[in-house]
Every structure is written in structure tokens, then in C-alpha cells.
Image 1 (tube, rainbow, N blue to C red):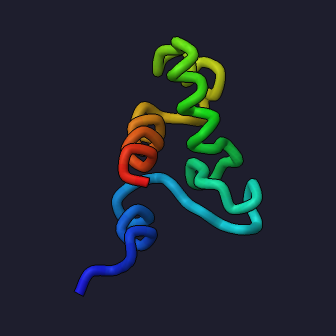
Image 2: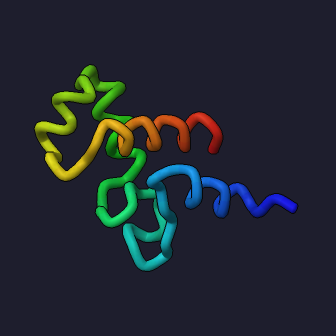
Length: 73
């Protein structure tokens, strides 16, 4: 039996949703950077490299996870 979509995402990617962090918005695990923030930067024309330069603790995989999460949410 498969788990909920939240369980699947927590196992498969780097996104978490916790009501105690950023009001429960989806964030990159172990950060306070929301998926929304990543998407706004990308839609504003920033490259993945530019985002990583602004947030050096993020990885390319973090950004891909944010995009994947948003596509399925």
C-alpha cells in the first residue's frame, strides 16, 4: 500500500511541510526557503546557478525538487 502524496514526497525529494516552519508552506528541507520563493526567482528569469549563488546552501537537486513538487501539487 502506498502512502499519502506527502509521504511520497518526503521520501523522494527535499521538500517538507511543517506548520511550525513558514506557516506550513512547502520549503526546502532544513531551510526556511519556500518552494514559492524558488519558483518566483525562476519565473523572474534567474538561472539555477544564480539562485545557488544567492543561497549557497541550496543544491541543484533542491531546486529541481521545488519544481517537481510544484508541478504535482
